Length: 374
Figure 1 (spheres, one colour):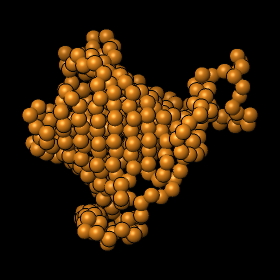
Figure 2: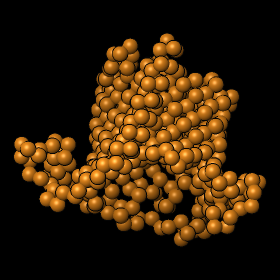
Figure 3: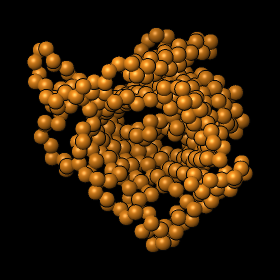
Figure 4: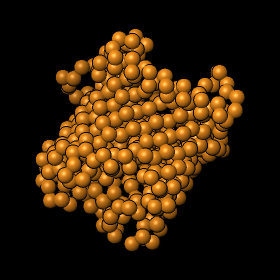
């Protein structure tokens, strides 16, 4: 029922924001952790910690995979800008976007040559297939125009706003938007609706808050006026661990309440593959469940610059009437790399998961993302 869901969103938002503030305040009044010169410690009964020992055991296991590397595999953009027709078009679009941002910034006052306006644009085509849903294509765009003349770190954002709800380094190819119509591989009307959002974003609107913030006021899906707040923070922990947290709250005239929490715990040592666990919790007035959750535990390698090879276990489910359920789980592998050019990426995911709600036993599904950056 709607009133139950609204009551659920408020305490979740309050708890998380309070936690951010408390943790930040605690970090400022306590002394920094002293360096453990003899780490890793022997696994005795007094100092044994399973969380700290797991990465050590995994790193010590034999592997046939190549060493970590940051070697360049594609030429820089400036070296390929005039090589082919496609390169010239990419350079023209990128230049047009920057020129447009300068013109828009000039509307609001005298510009500063040392702080020029800039624009970024992502053009994505997600392809997915499984034997139950068939083949789907979902084009997505997301752009941002920074306007330094307005001083308050304002920018214009447009396109598929659901991309901003994901972690920047999200290991999975996901899409919160509804699927295509059952009889359409490419749903043009839904694609237009999903990519029609635009908003004015105010970043870092207060220096007194202990976390990074974004405040959006805009329009999505044609007529849904919305206000969106995002707060995020990173913590550096001992023994090469780090923790990242994001809280997103959006209220729309039509879409009503939307609340999402993103959490990531990572263990990363220099020149080593890292371990990570990504968890998100989502509440929305537009979804049937009280709460949905997705968790990915994985290890990620980098064999060359901007490459990632990940493998792990996914688990996801829902919460209804205080009944927490596991709906889907299974292994996955993911590969991402620049292809031919520094500005063009391809990512492939292979999953073997089930779906209890739809009565589907474990099955293979694949996703391929083509992404161009301008």
